[in-house]
Length: 279
Image (cartoon, rainbow, N blue to C red; front, side, top):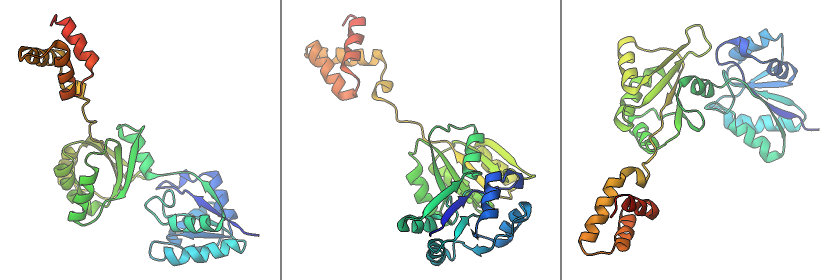
């Protein structure tokens, strides 16, 4: 009888955030697939577990996914974890999950900490709609190309960045995105946890003065929504445009139709504006 795969979210810093259900999943599994056995061993020590572990990281993810799926099909119950947070979110996990899906293997999830969501909800920026970008490319050309694609994005954007690349990334953001609001979450749930809520320019100045260390999540304000046609014209503008067409010999009806076509403003609004202005 086949076993199952359990995706287990683990703390992003504070070990006290390990849920009872996550602790049980780690202790009861036949095998734990983890990025760094030294990191996961600390969790096992906390829950008095002695579950065997196997390295499952970016460098061996492709080969190990098939091997682990084979072991699950043979009856093993495998728990998948990363060094911190939810597996598969900018961390190894997707290939193993996909391999299990393809084979019809049962998949369970023990939800929990996520740096992206934690930073988002504490940012003060809109949370109803957001997009997660993971890490931007490390080279300047590729990074700017990605930022240019994101520039019109209206949703709040969440991404990770390494401290040694933050200065260059912010410089590219300032040029490509403009000076938007931004929140930097650093070392979340750890002793030196810090939230900085400012603008891109403000964060650039802060980093230049103080430097930065630790794990960083950035939350960036989305682009403003495009103005609706009606927002570009007030009623007085519309009335003057109608009067100009009438002065050129058009009937009021034709003038209103013309202005509606040219501006994209609803005809009924233009009509009402002319009635109010006694045109």
